[in-house]
Image 1 (cartoon, rainbow, N blue to C red):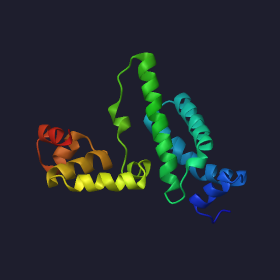
Image 2 (cartoon, one colour):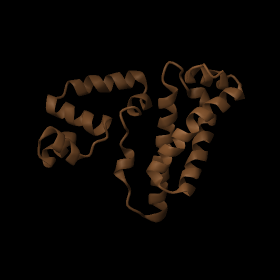
Image 3 (cartoon, helix red, strand yellow):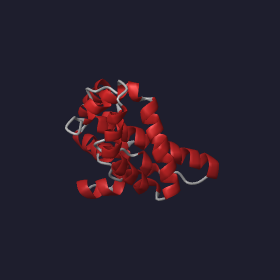
Image 4 (cartoon, rainbow, N blue to C red):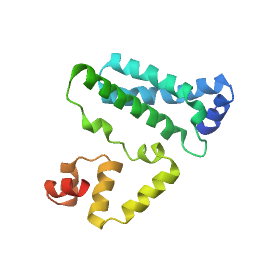
Length: 165
């Protein structure tokens, strides 16, 4: 079982093989927990998100499409749980919402959106002028902040924000 790809293990899990789930858990649990801790900085919050994450993976396992990356699917669910956590805390605590949590890194965004929709988005992005296309890719695919993009492209921060909007 250890030599199987993640997607193959997920297919086994979907069909009722809980040993496959145990293997997937051992492959992903540390990475996922570390990712969550990096975003929330509190063990209590991380534990809650982590527990909810595996509940969602189990509940929605039948929606997984093995033509796509399991890693991306799982990390997309994880990312969404973190976003939900901050949204709920914002409502409960009336605290400032961290927009940076909403930025997907380049490994997550393409997998979150189904393949057809992702291709359509890339096609639309390719129609944009070069400077806007590059700015959008750096912002949404690489997760850079406007100031970082401005420095990298040697442009004014105001122009970068205008190109992104």
